Structure formats: structure tokens, C-alpha cells
Length: 261
Image (cartoon, rainbow, N blue to C red):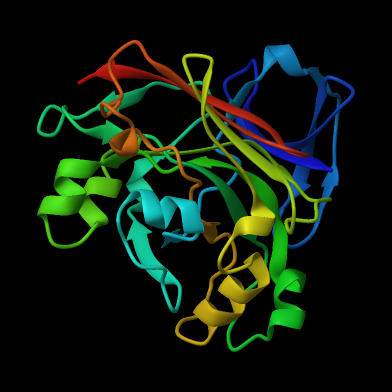
């Protein structure tokens, strides 16, 4: 099932189900109980938004071996957690703004994103996926000069619009072995399968839940494959007018263009 959040032709915003090229509004809470209501709308007549408004955006760094190696880093012995500000959230198809204070080294990172449906605290790996609503595409846009120069990653990862997710949440998906592709202006820059994750989705949920309560609606960026712009020869930085697509097998494609602030 595809669960989306959309702006309807009358300007109202609601969650709904996408099927047969139509959007079916729902009433209730997608994290608890809901049901479809009223008439459907042609999908082309609604504006898809980020499918969830998360209380927290948790992210895992260097979770693909080849990506760690391209950055000259050792493989992590445990998940490397960082956090993006929730104010960085961006919608599918909306422009990502290259910030005026850090315009020169903005990079792309295609990622599988997990959306939690209920609180998780001290859960086992075998129980972990019971806490998942579904999966979506994510783009962890990164200002590398800030990321590398600040001594920690939060600011470089959290500029407004640096966290596009979407276009919807796919609830019927096995995350263990699916293909992730990142394309810059139509050219494939990143591609891998989630079977190559150093730390799997169930492991990440269990590991993080032993340190903090993972709240309902939390989104978890699971790491990006190799092929980032900083590792190209010469480096490839995102420029105004560029478009980056994150396509994930079994989910769909998240697409955003880039503009100058």
C-alpha cells in the first residue's frame, strides 16, 4: 500500500492512499487507525507533500562499505548516528535551496528512509520491523564544507530544504535487498542494494532503541551508497538548475531541483 500526504485542489492537506492513479483521502491517524472517506481525486490533481511530519530525523553515516572507503574512513564498529533538524524537511518536486552561506560544496546522498509507526524502546532485532509503518525515498543533502569544518555534522546536514522525503510511504516492502539509485541530471551517480548495508534496518532500530525512545513518526535515513560528489574526479557539487533523483526499487522516485538562495 502507498500512503501519501497531499494538498488537495481546494488547498486542504490530508493523508490518503494512492492506487490506480487516484488519491483516496483518509480520516484518522496513519500511525494508529484510519479509514478512507469521500471521493477520490486523480493523482495528477493533487500536490504530493513529504509523507510524514516527523518528530525526529535520525540518520546513519558510513553505512555502506564502499561509501566509507571513498571518504577514506575506517568501517564503523557501531552505527554512526547524526541528526538532521526537522525544519530541513522538503517535499517531492520542490526546489532545494543552495544556502548563501555555504554554496560551494553541496553534495547529494540517496537513501532508503524508514518511517516508524509506534514507539520503540529496548526492542530486539526480531521485533524491530513490527514498529515500522513503511519506507520511502530520502535525499540527505549535505554542505560538505560545514560538515567537515564544524567538527560535527548537524549544521551541514540541516539547512532548510536539505531533507526531501517521498513521494509516498510504501508499507508492503522487504527492506533487506532492494536497489537504490541516485541520478544527477539523468546520469547515474550512485547505485547499490540494501543487502550491502553494514548495519541492517532491524539492527539499526534495535540499536537506537536501546539509547532513546524512537517516537511514532520518526524517520530514519539508513545511509548512502558510494558515488557522492566529493569522491568524483574532479569533485561534482550541486549547482542551481541541477536535478537529483532518488529511485528505490519497490517504492518509486523522489525528484528535486536545486536553486540559489
